Length: 275
Image 1 (cartoon, rainbow, N blue to C red):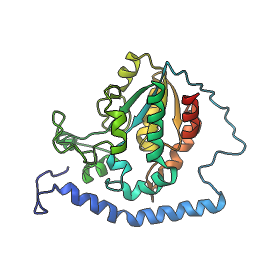
Image 2: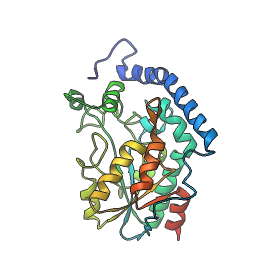
Image 3: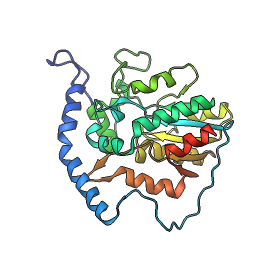
């Protein structure tokens, strides 16, 4: 459980210390994981490249602009900024795929097309830190103060915090037209209002992007598929942690190939939205 009282560090919450500790403490793990990925690269020039002879047929998803929405999970500072608490483990992947810029390109193209855009954010309030059980990543997120807010009915301290949206996305998100769903608390949208919001807008196709690939993006993909949506994932508008436990992006890209109705690049999606 996180402690939220102040210490003698100039009145800053201890979560700020945890951010620095995470960056330093996991550095060794990042180096080890990066070395593993480099080793894989010797065997394959690009470990994320699609197979030359795929066994699975293409999904064949064709975007219907009137029925499609861009859904972005967790476009927040804690995931996508060097100031975020997870940068030490996701930064390499974010930079490699151009994730920050690609998410913005998708937002810009969707807005220009007049398409529905929905954000599914991740927030933790003080009461969430009282949970009696959790998985390994949940424990880590609570420990480092990831996505923390002071409460559901206040935005005190929100601006510029790790839970806030990346600054370059705010003109698109705060335009009065973007759907900002209630927060998801673990990984998927089962317990927020994203599906309701999409259904109320006659949406049954989703262009899915955001953070992070093998966690919230994959969980959203799975649930939206189960709910009867057609889902195309934008492969370079996401990224994932690289840890001794494994490369999250590699795990996700495998499952996207197996399950998504389409697996696109940002260039492909922008081209389709501009046509």
